[in-house]
Image 1 (cartoon, one colour):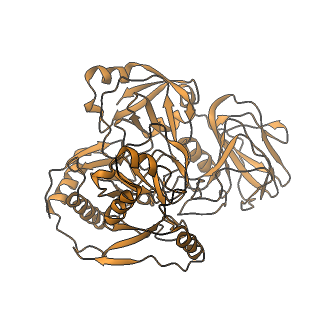
Image 2: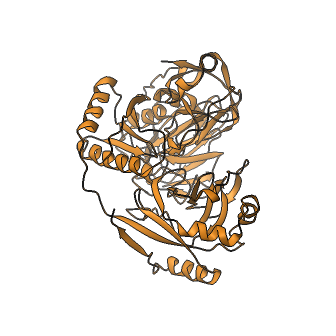
Image 3: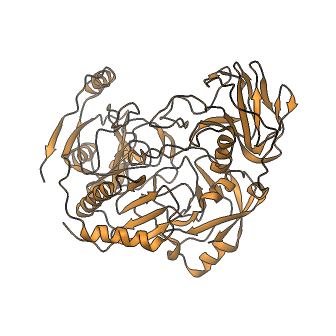
Length: 244
Length: 280
């Protein structure tokens, strides 16, 4: 496991921000997920909240930090001594997407600007395995890494008021799925009939950081069929355990 | 039970929020002014996390269908019980059939109504705080019935607690440096900490945008973590103070972080109010 030179700094009166190098990659993700587990184990008896994103972990205590240097030193020591924990299994999730014009509202524009046919866009988008880095922006919104460079496309300069629930979209160097209807600035290329966020489940989102996502194209008929199956709770998402 | 006769402008049920689900992208939410809400609960002998009604700008009209006791804190919206003025910051006995209504906004922006034992709305992800896509409702509606537990046991005293007027009148917002503060040049840093800023009409439970802009040459950052009270600087130079319903992550540079008590102070302000940041 790669050892990084981390930065520890106070963030407000109850939190410490831990920063990894400012880049997006799999080794940093592994290091963050591992240290998150180390922290969870360490703070098992204390109420501490641990959040994470591409390059950072934020540790928030339940009380004001008295001496920031003590806490920083404690965290630094924990990191320098931490070993690689045996992690949970990671999964590859296969996600059906309908790329029809009805959903792929911005396919035409990307096709013209990036000089690719719509079919090429669909093939490029659905051939990659995307890594789930973390969840943010909206409940159940997964930040995915691994978009093909040919599909990079800038965010809209004016966000639209209502991106559809299930919209599969491209924003800059990233692709993602809108778990619910929301204002948004990403470009819709398709739509998935699956739910990415369910408040009634103890695990509200089936995918977690470290998992992979692969999209596969479905027709509108298949999409409509899956919508019904999801509603009746009899659609099972195809998945595989990852070994790496 | 409480019957909502009129809903008012925007009243929501809130506790101290949803802290365990941020890694699913779920906002913390919870009362905007934790000082006032906690005060109302304490005076009633409630738990500090009991759900209260956060009343914004103009109040609802509520009919109690059971005996209980209540306490009002925060913004003064001229509260009346059966059309007679009542005081803030004290426990008030309620008899079944009583009607609580509100009048003119005198000071502040958000008033808190605590009831003995707290509001008993649905608990979703360990919290009753209303938020779109998490709870079924985003605010209370006319003709709705709000569930509370009847209570007659509170001892009522006539004492009224005095709170500091500065909680509502102070323009000073105390801040710490944000993670990207040092990336600003000295001139920008000085401007940020000396200028008087005006709260724009874009202010909500999610964020307060400020009118005055700051020349900005900073690049967006790789999406990172934010907190309620984080001040973001957008590419066009706008300053956005994130509040309780904010997203869990963001890509704009985080230039300042409000002290927790200053989040409470800011949440009692609205459009056109002036604020100044003071570095701690």
